[in-house]
Length: 335
Image 1 (cartoon, rainbow, N blue to C red):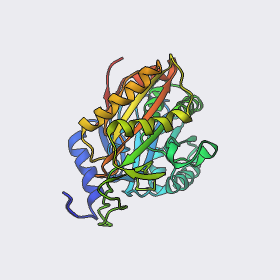
Image 2: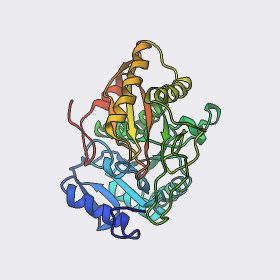
Image 3: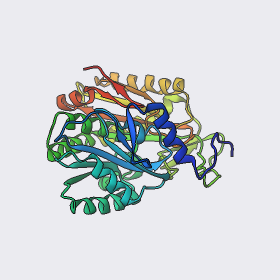
Image 4: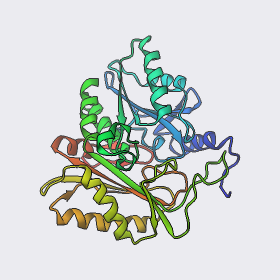
């Protein structure tokens, strides 16, 4: 195992300290707790807090989206492991501005369990919370069992919508409602070409032959739906788009945002080649693309591969997507 780290035990702490050294004007730690990152931007009293939590190893998810117009706070655990409910509760308290906190996170058992405990705990402090769970990965369960689906890169779009809605001073109920509506229109699916190595484990999370590709792989190395021989970028795009579009209603005249998300070890050139085919598929169906996102938005350490996310827009969702935001890893200042 070759990694540019100090020790496996200090991996998360060193990463967090590096973020503060680089972006201390935008983010800060809660009372020097390296597990909890908070926005360093001024916040209006009465604004709904937007928070998330999850395992480390997915930068810029989740930590990279703390700032203006997105998340107010994020708690992280060890690589691919949920933070404790106590850390989540501390983060929720720090992000409450009097009108409650929206907890927005992926559908993973540790995060589900710990967020429920944290929300119960802060009720004793008279802090109102709502939980919205991201389930955008079409490969992880069929449509009839969509509540079992994992949350993957589409979570970033949900952060964007929720953060913009909160900045408009919507109520907690309305922020949750519009975020849920966004998630009903977000679908993702990915492929993996290679595994990654968790520092404390020191071995690959799965094995795959040099000439193979796994369709539908999860961002923690969860099994996909099938292993195929390596194929062209166009063929990969066609398979992923067919699965996504079979799962959602898209017709000529619709507008979507497209995310091509690198999992950590895929060059931007390869992502752009895939986007080229996705754009062609949508264009032939009369579907317009608004604000394409191409790059690394939710990684899995150094895993090679990528995912495609389609976000179907209406006028309100498009406005919230385009609203200004500024964080260490995501900036959109175009109004």
